[in-house]
Image (cartoon, rainbow, N blue to C red; front, side, top):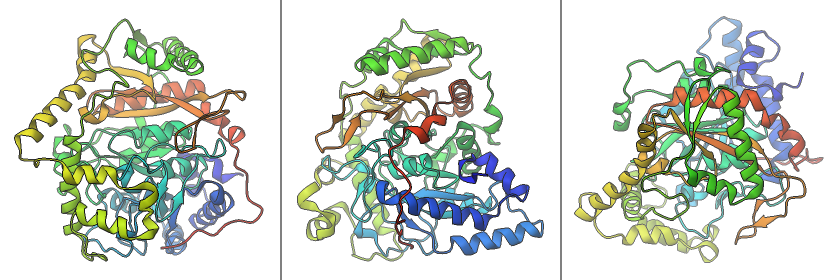
Length: 510
């Protein structure tokens, strides 16, 4: 059987039934990576210990010693997740090659405790796309340029691009990504996978290279809604190392897998503001597909409330201001570098990081600059200043517009295209992106200013369900019902332009 086509639940069953071993899974996934990686560059590095860990998991299984739900399952994580093993964690920068850390990412440790094997680290937009507007999506100094698999030179979108590409190509059973603003939902859309951005604090951010601790979120990307629900089930929970997890309003983590119900949309009130329609209709093909999606969820029992609008927020109107994020970035980087166990280049703050980028040819400063880092360095005030507090309150008020809309119209969730500019970051709100379709084969190619294909034949698009803080059960339920009624990503393989290489490439280990 084509084991690589199995979803996470199917892989777990195959292991339990003895149809495959963990060692065979490692061999299968590394073979797939070697076949496609020269075309997409989604992988940063592979774990040199993965095979030996798999053999150990197989031996444990033979003896009946099952560690947890993910026993022997290979998982990939973004190269911002600290792992205390033989792999570096670099955020795609030579500034952190060889760095040593005091503790591992809490969610990685949870995966290991459940029996998972960390197969490797995925490529990303360097520093979570925080360095400069000139840096392309999916580019990092250490790993090069990643591409989406559905079109030549496809923009993979978002900083968790490598994880989304890897999930789409079945490089592992599931992947982890991180999002501050769009870094899970956007690449999930363009790579036709499911991406879940949890409420910040539902999953611990401890041991993740930070951008904005007020907004950073850790979540799964996988081929199905049930897969991301299963991963969320394992990584969610309180953590003394991350004070944001103290906001979790329940003592027992909900059964997110049980939320995967085909009737999950039945009776729910779904908000679709007019500005969401306006953004969808700005691309006629997407507008038609989105309106079809609205009719589909209505046929599944949802009550759509659409003659409504946000009070203040206007998608696409560039309403975000930078001061809050700039100061958070500068201060969180300072704490991060000072906390390193071994700091290979003696960098202690964002000013010194900028100088490293300027003087290290591999960082390609002449090509990409460091404009956003410079803005963060030069931002006036601190997290204790009145200007900062004022800016933060202003942005948080914009973020509250989603919940205000839901409350005013007694709605359960909000629906939009996954490319719609929603203030989920400002409101610290969750969202889940589910595949909706693919642009037509005769679609004209649209490139961005860097020459990457943003829209074109067979490139995927998606919808996002968003909701109140800690409403992941409801979002998963909606997403699962829509997914089961449409099964869009069953078409992924036939829509992709990448093909298995006749001369497989080699991916670096450690």
